[in-house]
Image 1: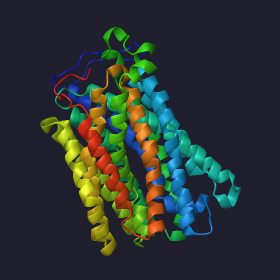
Image 2: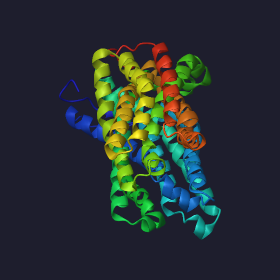
Image 3: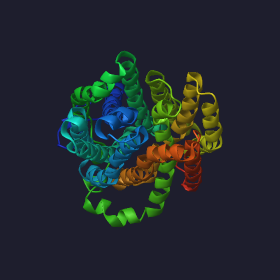
Image 4: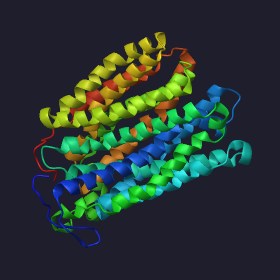
Amino acid sequence: MQTKTVPARRHASGIEAAAEPANRLTRRILAATVAGNALEFYDFVTYAFFAVYIGKAFFPATSATVSLLLSVAVFGVGFVSRPLGGILIGAYADRAGRKPAMLLTIALITVGTLGLALTPSYASIGMAAPIIVVVCRLVQGLALGGEVGPSSAFLVEISPAGKRGLYGSWQLASQGVATLVAGVFGMALTGTLNPADLQAWGWRIPFACGLLLIPVALYLRRSMPETLESGTASGTAAGPAAHSPARLRDHRGLLLLAILVVLGGTVANYVSNYMTTYAITTLKMTPTIAMSATLVVGLVTLVFSLLGGWLSDRYGRRPVMLIPRILLALLAYPAFMFLAEQPTTAALLGVTALLAALNALSAGVILVTIPELLPRSIRAVGLSIAYAVGVALFGGTTQFVITWLIAATGNPAAPAWYLTAASIICALATFALPEVNEKAPAH
């Protein structure tokens, strides 16, 4: 912050929060936001990393390919409820505040993760097992659909002018943290457990550990300040009329462009997250080596999303969003062809790092730019809808589509076709977005 102390803030409950050193407050606020967001994404994406084992546990089929397709299809089910979560929880955040909305999403993700960790296999309880898994994925999707809008709006609103790109990029950086931690679990489990134990019970351990961290995230978020009330004139701009359908319709063109921009980042993100499954099923690598791709995705996403945010504060949002997306469209197919011809550990990690870095540079700034372009009174619900719809339509189907493409064509580079098309659409939509004044306050 720009001053040594910050004034007392009035929380949503009406209680005055004592002033404290700004650097301590900033660290605590960022920790609360990042910890909660990372935990929710960790619980959600862990499913993708263990899709092979979950498919065998809950979706037995006549062939391994069909079982995997059923598993990644249920991974996609988690995206179906995202738009509903975005609308309901996003509107709640614009009415009641960012803090209560983010506490609600933590509670919902707890329910979904608990179900995944404890549900017996198909062999034990029959059809009840996949039904419970589907319900748990729907609850997790509801939570994540409502998480991104309020948390991104919060990060934009607490950041000083001129640093919103860096602050806001922690939204994607926290997803990198989630991926990195999930990757550490994956490598540890595949390296220490034999395949039978990993299939029988080992894949449940990461979900159980995620549950142990939820009280920490809740504690941190309960101490957060509220940015909606403190930044809203007379406390009335967040009333029911402020986020009525008419207000959203006024920005429908922007929301449509935002969905198309989110499309590119979503497809690229889930292609990167699929690299572990791709390495096991297509490149025939060992699970331990395959899981190392997850570590690379997490680390690269963490570093390059923050780098992208910092660059966007210096050189503008549009070039940082646009240039990496164009490079991704140009390099995706050559990268996959190289990996298919040279299926080595170094090639896997190199290609994974390239795809994740280009996406993180651009996607981190996307989650800053969209809320900057929306009025404060509909910022959370607007971003929630754009993000949840974009992710539901394209993120939920990405792993299924590329699994099908590989099986249908026999071409291990087939995922690049989908990634290239999504990157081109994203680049065109990015070019059409209005430019953002990074120095202006986030009204």
